[in-house]
Length: 256
Image (tube, rainbow, N blue to C red; front, side, top):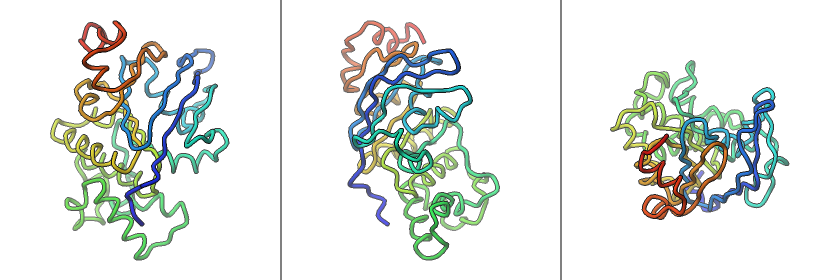
């Protein structure tokens, strides 16, 4: 299995609205993520960033009372027509807090999705686990301790383990929801280096509160405010010459 992904797909959101019960939290957002690009989503707490990326792989709908309108297209295909479990293999998610499966070894954490897909233990699985850990820049640190619990790793290592787990099933898109917020600066730098390397093969959407991180890792940036998309464009333009005063005020720290 080649973890380099020449067919990484783009994703389009068209007039996406979302609710929790009667409360509308996204108000008709539209944007496009190009294949093998990194899009950063920035904005103050409660502006709908995490809700939006959870709509991209239909995780929003698993919340009781939650619903969505509009269209999400993966390579032109409406994701509402996909089986949700199969979709989440193609559009993987890395969460804010590292979440290795606590009862599983490092090896089994990475292999878990493969086993769900019906792959049995053997040389092929060993190869995919090793390639995934290499791709997540973790192999050299864990190759001699694959049988230890995933939870025995440091926070930054756990997050890279979760990224390896997502990569093992060869997704088209990787969603990252504040993947560095619980990490120290050294671990954060490693994740950022990893994102830069992964975009050669994967389409990535990252939610972040860290303006410097968004500027460092992304090709395009979307600024959300109160459930609306205020501005979307090239990251260099958003951070040096934003078109909207609200964007400028947020980036300069006047609010948020």
